[in-house]
Length: 216
Picture (cartoon, rainbow, N blue to C red):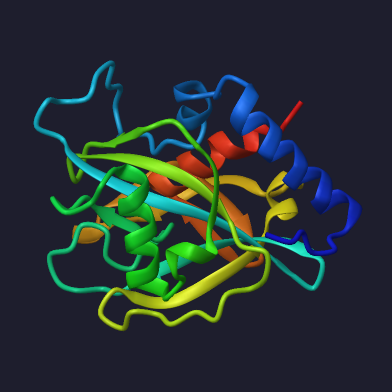
């Protein structure tokens, strides 16, 4: 795949990400925990009955800036993750060859990016999500031009494209109350605030590990 022209800052981020995903130890739970909701609790091991899922942390360029893809999910009734901002992804199917295949399949199903267009450049630490009993494996991918997205109407309410460098600014990490299903409010919950979008929960934890990996 051809490397597009990026700003020097964004090219450095991309190069560093490629290097550290291959050669450096992942920050793991310590970095994930910094963005964890206060009611999440501690899990020293994953339950044996946890379901498997994969997500795709997809990078691509827009106007010489390195962007990161998120989606806002639709809001069906009784869905614990309704309306949340997340990475594209979902549960493993029996036909999937491996966890990476799950992430690529879900990416294509949810936003229309074909697997052959994606270069897998690494993966982050698995993350157990107690509220849904999923063990999620995050894969990091790169596409050398902005994809022509085709959102899956039943799953994706909208697509979010956020400049990755913005996550490293001093005011990107915030904390405050978050409303959840059932009308409850979680106090003092960490979240990312980038371009007026707010990302919290498991997705914020995965993002936090990636930011920590690239932070000296």
